[in-house]
Amino acid sequence: MASDDLIRVANLKKYFPVRTNLLASLRSKEVPMVKAIDGVSFTIPRGKIFGIVGESGSGKTTTGRAILRLEEPTAGSVTIEGEDIVKLDKEELKKRRREMQIIFQDPFESLNPKMTIYEVVVEPLEIHRIGKDEEERRKLVSEALEEVQLIPPEDFLFRYPHELSGGQRQRVAIARALILRPKFIVADEPVSMLDVSIRTEVLNLMLDLQEKFGLTYLFITHDLAIARYMSSNIGVMYLGKIIEFGEVSEVLDDPDHPYTQALMAAVPVPDAERKRGELPIRGETPQPINLPPGCRFNPRCPYAFDKCFKEEPELFPVEPGHGAACFLYADFHSGRLERGRLPKY
Ligand code: SF4
Image (cartoon, rainbow, N blue to C red; front, side, top):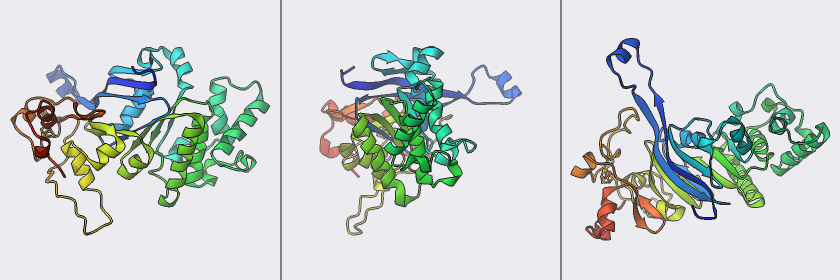
């Protein structure tokens, strides 16, 4: 682990058993599993933003939740400052949770509608017994609201979530996450439920806070433009695996995995003259309960060859710090394939 890595995720898996009827479960000894995440690994240096991008159902949200143990991982490790939080007992985990917070996608659902804004934001302080009395906690809550630009805080403290706009509600959720002075925040599609006109404001606020407090983010999004705006490095997920990773500009400007190329080819470009090459990606994403043997992208990949139907590719290096889970890059790396013969969108 490099000394400046705050988070290291190694071979993280989360499988969910599928409910079957009694007769089916008596017939089969094996419980069918949905492999929501299936061996995800990455590191995030302190003070950096790592973006996870992918379509709905790719395992992005489950990855964020498993890292914080809001879902218990099936296997793998999540190390923060050298300590594997997967191995912590309940009390130890509670202490670490102060340092690891989450901002959920939907501020309409994540805030208890029966609690005032003060009660929502003070709750983490009470759970962790921070602040010697009510007066001190009130001061901390007011400061947290000021930090997210809910000013003056007295105007917000005793209002209810339904009295605020979507953007204000998400600011409250950010204040709640920040009040414990965490080191690491999982932001799970934090602006996707907000009006387009206020998304940039909330993203800029998150960037300002990241700089001010030296925060480290795992930023989950399906929106490639937002991933580019927010992240220094990204991982592209497909059916529970990271299939390409690297610096955000390298991955999005010069994608190597055929799936990333297809994602980028699908992004509309403002200049009608500048058409991207058609990528003949076909079919639907398979179900994670019924993954194809070999490379999980093989049913849709225009470049699939024999080996792709028998073996699963690991992440092969393309450039330093940039990798793709595709056999074409194994051949490229070993010199059996020239760069000019690699697929390009
Ligand atoms: Fe396509 Fe084969 Fe590469 Fe998978 S390993 S992305 S099927 S070429």
